Length: 435
Image 1 (cartoon, rainbow, N blue to C red):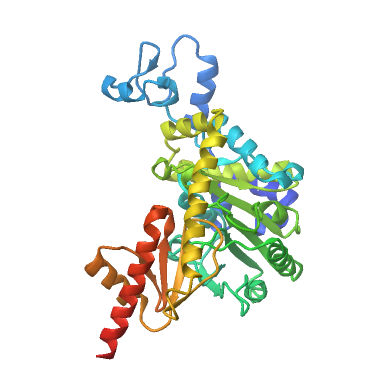
Image 2: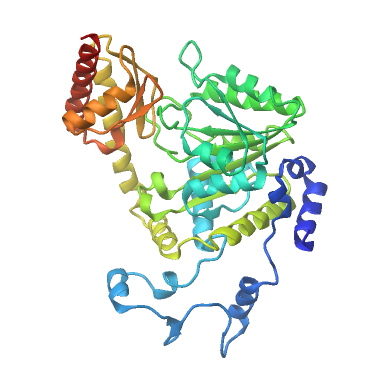
């Protein structure tokens, strides 16, 4: 094993032995090279005042070389903030700005010791880093049965982990904390579990309330007290889009101090929060009372980044930083929030109006981009195809009964027509089935 990896491992064994035990074989082996091209280039950037012949970019006139036709479309930005490589951990100013935003949005983080957010190529990349660092063949990844299908690819297919599902809702159509607890405690023989908590949930648009949040934290604590090392990951892709009386903060801060056997990891980003999906800017953040543990995890994380994508895109990091620093940011974001809230409220008023009879039920939703119908008489796939072929309307079928509708991309004035047409399609498919 490389000596740098061994040093990081020794630090974790000393400072946070439970975190060391959570690492995958790859997580134990990975490191960021301190004496490689990037570190030597960084040193030269501060000391090579005459000529800097290190890193592989081209320069001209004291600036990164670039094509005028590209720069003309980006003239508001300095070439040095666009064309140079961003550091593997991300643009330092952006990392600081995102950390400040995290505390502003999650006031309870002010009393939590957590590291500097590390920039990722959006949230999927952040989750992939979690999988690489912590998931080995056969390790349990605990998620609800209403989940984003990419978890299977990221943790199951790529890393060979075992996906363990529990029902998202209990009999009272609230978050099934008892099911979560049972799924975690079932991993006692393995001594380790990765739990992914995605709120607002994709596909249902559900976020627990404060009481349910405490129950979730208690379930994780119970697993830790039973001797299970828990990597507790908050997938906060749709953070901030809370339209009703639900949790208004990420569970990251509560999980950060719940138990020494719990490592809290926050995966979030500008992708959905700031409506910049194509920019691919996300972050991964760790919590620990040990500064040495945070430093070791950061080195291993940027080692994974260096070994896969080398570094994220500099222009989009610059664009996001510019937005966060703008005095208009909060106002413009609030405007978009109210548009999204208006759409969610309109959907709920339509569904509660009684106009659709017993055609379907709907899963509780209060946040995010989506909601899910539970069809009672016909298959979701049959309805999806009928909507697409007969009416030019796209929806997502999940399993036999569930139809996901993204109200995020439908203007509020069009929602009535959308759901009326879905109802019509369900009725037509049901009638055809009886013929």
